[in-house]
Image (cartoon, rainbow, N blue to C red; front, side, top):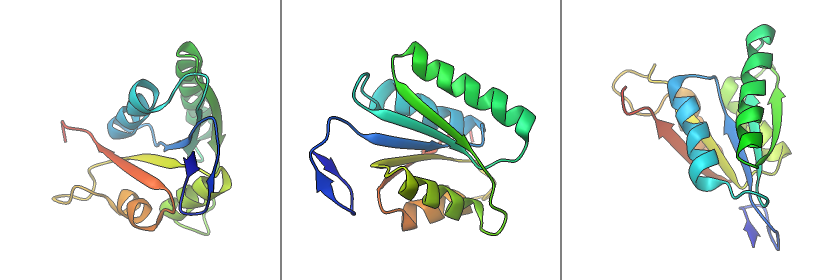
Length: 139
């Protein structure tokens, strides 16, 4: 059963969106998805970055796609940057577009004493799907 706040339909697997800036916590979020959450042959992993550093983005997304392929996971990658809206809204829009069942984000630690940064907080509060925020335990 595929279930989100939008609908409940029979399905063979989950759609998981990992939003990454390639920070340590974002890499841990991706690792959590590919080692614990995603089921080989059933689930679809989307990897999204909201960056406009094209040289870095191409290399980064290729690395994530190869890691999925090595584990037998289907993966789609995306990179875009809409400067008219903030990063969290771009992530939430992508989650809606791919009809994610689960959104997984890292928290980058720039929020000081707070565990959640502004992007991960907004995603957790506003997303219409299950959202998992991964914190790097070294932070």
